[in-house]
Length: 122
Image (cartoon, rainbow, N blue to C red; front, side, top):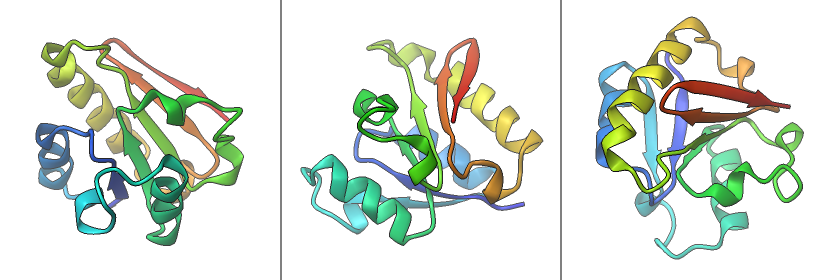
């Protein structure tokens, strides 16, 4: 099944291209908002587009500021200034998406994707 994502400006093209190649729909921030749009506008646009927010911005992993229950899903990629870990992160994310192909699975969840694990918070 095809999932729908809204990629924040900080998400690498390699991540976006991998998701598209896997058959998912990806909206890019730059096509909808200015690159310097504040975080509340970014996550609101993801909601408007009925999309899972995809970001490298650690702010979206803050469940106090962005409680997962209020959103259609947040995927926070944690490369921690190590872009060489992106292939591992992409592979792990794609495996997870394949195992969980329904859009509603992500509703109200925060997924933190690291090179060797995915943590889920609700």
